[in-house]
Length: 339
Image (tube, helix red, strand yellow):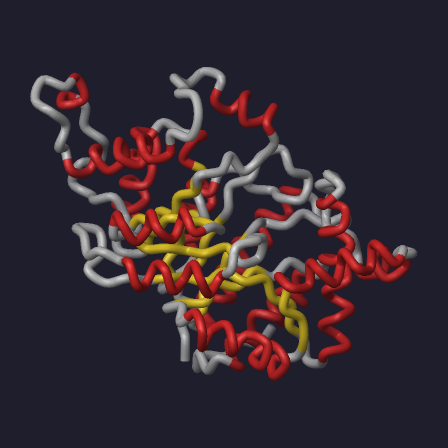
């Protein structure tokens, strides 16, 4: 069966403060490590009341220290927010401390609103427009040391210099991202959970156009999907009601903590709001394990991802752990841990 991984947003709820959400992330990582998940990635978001972690590199170190087998990485570092040298130094440090277990996923977006993005970058030497490719090239140069002769960076070394950068993955939700990942020969992760672009087209394009490189000899595509699983379809629908209301509010620009099931079920939806929820359900898979498998299989067969990354955002932390346990069993990971 296809390998399973986790993308964690360190979700804040109306009953879980940000500090507790971070501790829940560490607890969940321990849990899925025992279940046989292969990868645990942390997102970078800023100024969002619903997301507790703006610094995935800090969380990566905490989680790698308390797990044994699972790879831990960023999903991702928003490269426009950071000097490439800083990213190189921090991830080389993580690789030195946890060799062979770290991933460096990179994103092009700021992970926040315009004002916060400006505050993040206001003291940096910014270029106008999209400078992601320039930043990516510079990041790679800190590893390859291929600066032109006489360049001042030739005298700058990203420490620790005896540890390599971990594997680089490019994150995206468009045809541009899949094309770039294929052309530079890096791993690719497609964000189906918020993309408007067709996931199957992105995955197919990446696999067909991939060029072997010093980073990877063969393509590896991760499909990230939002899933809520419970023992029954009815129970999963109840859990997902929080996500439904939260998404409706996000579409209005209200980035609030995840509401409880009780609050969500009591909300009086208009006909237009219910239609909006149903449209959003095209990017959220809800149901029992058998239902989830039936819903996901056509996409897996058509897109042929090499790995499936699960994002589960529900109000109750134990229900979240249970959701990952049920998926592990359904996909035959072969290791069972009590929820």
